Amino acid sequence: MSRVSSINNPATHNSSQGYYRIDHVLEIIPIGKTRWYAGIKSGEFPAPVKLGNRVSMWRKSEIHALVERLGA
Image 1 (cartoon, one colour):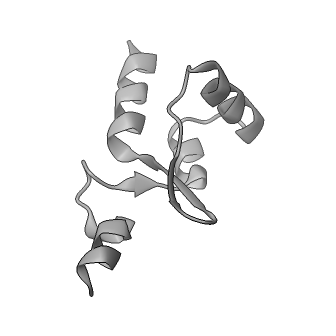
Image 2 (cartoon, helix red, strand yellow):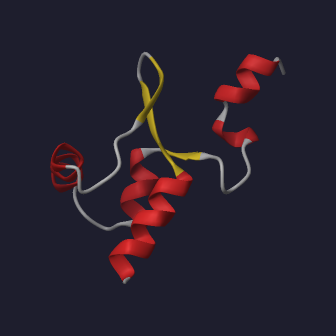
Image 3 (spheres, rainbow, N blue to C red):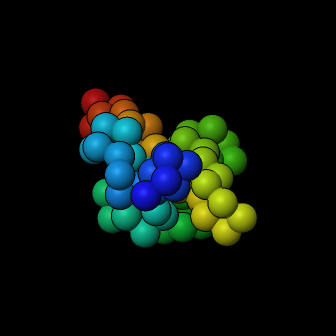
């Protein structure tokens, strides 16, 4: 695997540095996609990271921090 592809491949990151796709985010934070994207727009939820033309993912660290904040 080349260095570039390993940087962009979420499977190569450890649990604190990886990324989640939207479906997994919404399993962790059980809300609908419309509510999720409205929360991004309002600044309540973290924005995705664009990893390709058609690939947007969320940093695991940001999702875990959000869960901690919502649980408090």
